Length: 324
Image (tube, rainbow, N blue to C red; front, side):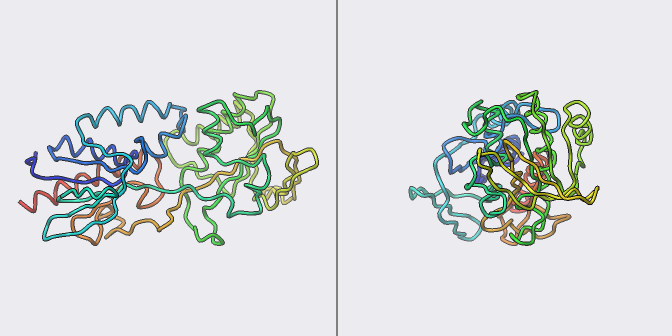
């Protein structure tokens, strides 16, 4: 345990920030969470169910929130300036409040790729093209005027990921599993529907992920097509006509759909944050006393994000001990 003279400011109140705050609290470290939104939880708060087993996102978020009881939280605030004076950080907020801290942890996470950048998919042009985040909102609220008992549904993987044209050559790690999870949920919601997923290759690497892939096909009848969608157009009746290629069969495809879901990946407008060493110092930046955790570093699944936050706390505790 460290004495309570130590203070850490956490920038961001998503999953990584909440987990780190609870672990810093356990170590007796005074912590302040700064969150720009009015509520905590980040992207997790917008999700309904999680892959691979369909656990309720709310249950995970409630656990993270219960673990930070007693931690100071400032919502509806942004950090406008960070200055260092000797070994102390002076953190200025948008209301001119200044907080002094011994260390700063950045857990500001990721942005969802803007689907309109991929004009060939027609997002923002055709009414029945939506994103994975919008579909998840439908599962959570039960309301979206664009989703009206669709009979034929398509999912496009890797929208904004593994794409040199938009400058994102990395895999976002969560899109394949999310697509299959949502495909199963659409079959549950609309049992008479046909569901297709169009993928480059399926990256089902985690515990239970391959089971989800098999379940989607065997139990839900989801049809997985290896091939990229190259063009989307709107028919006279408002339905969508897509062109793709089945690369396993070596044949072009043309299909009419009632709904097309774009699996938009992770990115950061200002780029992912560089750390000292991606293997052994993944949470340490070149700025002494400033640390980073979660998807601010790179795309991660939720379990990886939480584990990474734990690792960041260990680095912060060690850093504060060395200063004594």
